[in-house]
Structure formats: structure tokens, C-alpha cells
Length: 333
Image 1 (tube, rainbow, N blue to C red):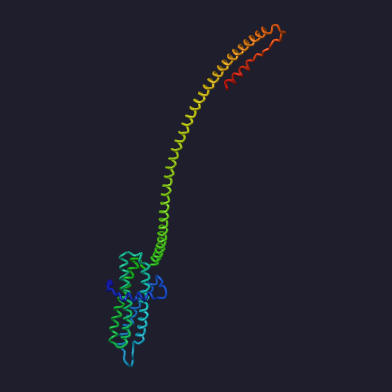
Image 2: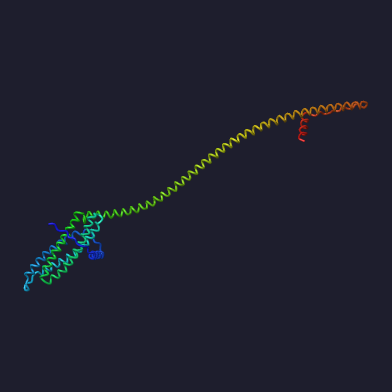
């Protein structure tokens, strides 16, 4: 026969109180401690039910002269006190294990963990109520029967809680060491992912900076290429101008040389003509001088005939070179 599923309403005050109580624990609750505590939380209620059954029958046969059941009742009280602390510890360790395994669970498993946590809070509350009623059962025999029924109900609640916990373990993998390792690996992976995201952010910033610098460099290269093209065009124009100047200068030099040659030839011809003219004039002048000298000689000869014969007058004839020199001097004047 399957144990029916028990659904409890939300009890924020209880869960909030237990949560605050867990936050005040002065030490870190270890993981994977929930399973061994749960075994005691399930077994102790059954033992308490057995003890209370013996206690009820003992009280029924008890007389003032021969009281019975005190030892069983004291043992039951001791077990209930232990049960309360075990239930509280099982709740605390269950919260710790559930939190560690939370990220590895499916949405359905997470919903079941929430329900299991709520039922665990009710188990803790029921254990406290059971402890209170145990003290009340010590007063009279009627309350002992009621307490037995309450103990049976609590045992059923514990069994149902154990059933749901077992399903979480074997069906969803909650509170298994391998799952804890996976959870630890998941936390490490989250840390590594966070570091990778930070590194990616840094690389992204660096990449943006590099892209910006690359863009600026490309713009500079484009500008330099434009300047290079302009300089190449200017160089080509200058070379063309230089070639043109060389060509023009060569033509002008040729023209100047030709003109100079013509001028020199003309000067030579003119000089030769002038020299010939001057020679003719010098020869003519020399001939005239000779004629004049001869005439003068004849005149003197006639006039001086009675007188002693004088020595012949010797007239020096100018040379051709002297005539040329005198002609040049006259031309220069």
C-alpha cells in the first residue's frame, strides 16, 4: 500500500524562524550529512511508538502498590528529546544540501525540494509539539492514549517525509556525492566563466581600441598614398619641365653657336676686306709720296745746278707693315 502524499499549506512564520535560526549557527554546516540524520529521524518515531504501546499496557496493569511503566516512559521522553534535535539537524543539513544541488536540478525537482523543505519544517514543529505532549501525558492515563495516537501520526509523517526524500535522491539525484562533485565543478565553472567574461570584456575593450587605431592608421596610410601620388605627379611635371628646358636650351645654344659662327665669319670677311682696302690705300699713298719726292728732287736739282753738287737726298720708303699700322691707328681714331 502506497503512502499517500501529504500537502501542507505555506507557513512563512515557521520557515522564517527556522531560516533565522540557521543563519545564527556559528559554524558552517557540512554537506552530505543529511542522509545519516534522516535515518534516525525515521527510525526514532517507530521506536517511540513501540515504547508508548508498552507504556500504555503497563499503565493499564499498574496499581498504586505496584506502579509500572516509569522506566519505559522515561526512555520514551529521552528518545523524543533526541528526536527533536535530530529533526532540527536533519532540516538544517537538508537545507544545506538542497542549496548546493539547486542549480543542477530541473524545474520539477526544484518544486519537489521546496515541498520537501516545507514538510521538514512541519516535522520539526511536530517533534516540538510531541515533546510538549509527552510532558502532558505524564499527568494522567487518558492523555497517554492520545499521546500514543499522536506518536503514530508523527511516525506516519516521518515515513512520508522519508519517502519523498528517497524519491529526490534516487529519481532526481539530490544529495548524492557525485552530484555534490558536479555542484562543486559547476561552481568552479561559474568562477571560470566569470573570469572568462571579464577577460572577454578586457579583450573586447582592447579589440575596440585596436580597431580604432587600425582605422586611424588606415586613414594615415590613405593620406600618405594621396600625398605620394601628388608628389609623383609633381615629380613627373618637374621632369617634363626639365626635359623641355634642356631641349629649349639645346636649341638656343645651337642657334647662338650658329649666329656666333656667322658673326665670326662676317667679321673675318670684313677684316680681310678692310686690310685689303688699307693695303691699297697705303700703296697709293706710298706711290704719291715717291712721286712727290722725285718731283722735289728734280726741283732741287734744277735750282742748285751752279752750286756744288749736293749729296742726293735719300728718302726712306715706308714699309707695308708701317702703312697697315698707321691705317689701323687712323681707323681707331
